[in-house]
Image 1 (cartoon, rainbow, N blue to C red):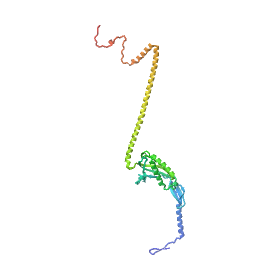
Image 2: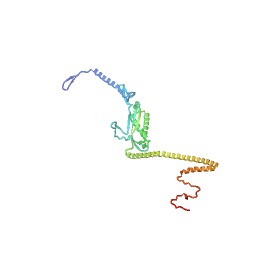
Image 3: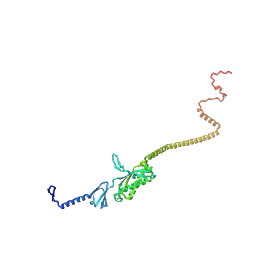
Image 4: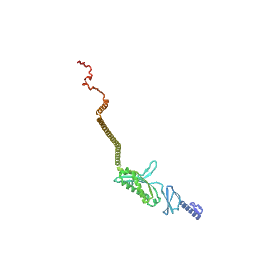
Length: 328
């Protein structure tokens, strides 16, 4: 075969037999078909083989062989990787030194009405795994959108049953646990093949226009709780001490009463015995009682004056210093 160039030069090209061209083309096609028949499934994935678009089988991680495309195609589903959906915010980049978030207005997702007719801004994430790849792909159309709709529906339903104080303060963990349970029940009911791992309430706040007023109310409530706790602490300190003192007083009174009763009984028994002795020997008993009484009294007297019972007056005993001698 000759080719004439613009300058008039003729070039002769070698002729290639048509059979050789056909063989080369067939070899190329065979190589392409053979290459497309091999595929690899990563360790965290599961492969679903479709034959003419219909489910045929599920293959585990590893190297596998299938019929050439378009007879059979493979869809890879991450079954070991934890996936998540974000509501009320979007993460654009995560990691060191800090995550960055989208400035897109997503209040339509996060603005919710509480049970006491207040409004709260609720941002949360739903972490999940694909438990059944077949159901995940074929049982529900647009499974990701359906899962997001389920999240919003369940969250709004539960927030609508709570007061704004519960949503913003003490009820967050309980709300997250209840949303997780109800969402899993709904996923099982719709056969989505999804296992809900965790619901995390990222940020729960009042709307920006009322946030200062809410903060003031919150501070007042915290101050009230502080005073209540302080009063309870004082109560727990004073009441047991007063109860102990009261018990001590009661025990002292009971001991005093027992002592007085025992003393009274002893005195009565002593009186009976003395009376019996007096009846047997009145004079001896009278003198013994007199001597015992004087024995108890005498040691307590500091100054003692002893008088003769025959003395008629006290004048001779008085010391009269410098007095004149009286002559008869």
